[in-house]
Image 1 (cartoon, rainbow, N blue to C red):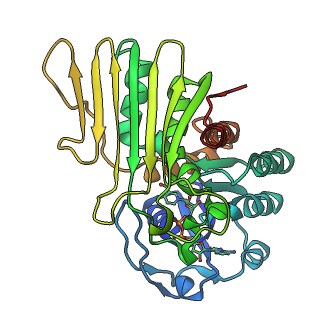
Image 2 (cartoon, helix red, strand yellow):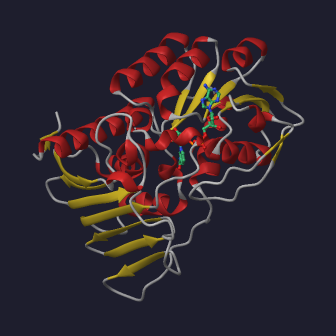
Length: 348
Ligand SMILES: NC(=O)c1ccc[n+]([C@@H]2O[C@H](COP(=O)([O-])OP(=O)(O)OC[C@H]3O[C@@H](n4cnc5c(N)ncnc54)[C@H](O)[C@@H]3O)[C@@H](O)[C@H]2O)c1
């Protein structure tokens, strides 16, 4: 068995999730960790919770520990660098990791701008490393059921689809970076992109988008630049399908994180909601409601296991290609244009 040696940078909410998952994988090992906050790479690192998943203290006694990313890259013999830092750092760290001869996994969204996405793609092509963007919803079990029921025809012809993702403002972010749209792209690029990416993967690129948005002004944050989008509602124009997504982080702090969908085809409705029990239910036009058979879990485990197996086999990841992750950023940017202009934006 091959053991994939990983260097993990950014030990906040998402980096800690990744660390714990690698710990359970037989064919991957985190050999080095890096965070600019020294406490987060102490032998025992404090737990950082986010909007989903369990959080625990980390035992980092077996890892080489760094506060400087370049030092980790220089000193360690790695197969893969896992980048879980704030979004404005994705491009420079991914490019550096690839150019140092590693494979790279980078958290979503791919980058803050399309130009940065292009630099990442060029670096992977130039250096020959594999690049994977962690668009976890494509690996999230309930969304995998949706994709397979569409693909396999069990939903029939899909007529209507509605996606939702909403939460309170994410208070865990180090130095409040998520609240600064210059660094994170706001709720549009950070949170809503999950549904955009899923929509593109199952329905393809829409002909146009029409978006409306709101922000909550002073409640959630000071902004360093521009107008933040705290909540967006978008219509995606397809020929034979009515499709909308809404999402953001405008909810009161007491509101539990919600994600879900309702997708109606000629054979019935598939509904998923974190707030329902059962969370996933198929309502056929013909027959009783039932929960499809599937393995519950999170997309985080599934996506990391998938990319580790791509590395082992020397196969470029097909389930999320860098170009498809860039396409999700492009559609989010079109939504931002629609919000700014108040007009529908045709997708070229
Ligand atoms: N897939 C998902 O569901 C999901 C959920 C949350 C966040 N994310 C993504 O994961 C990434 C990280 O988000 P987060 O919520 O974990 O943020 P976070 O603030 O909790 O963690 C970021 C970590 O990066 C560290 N860091 C910042 N600059 C650094 C540098 N120069 N060198 C080393 N370390 C540095 C910070 O100290 C912090 O520990 C973001 O791109 C975010 O969009 C994905």
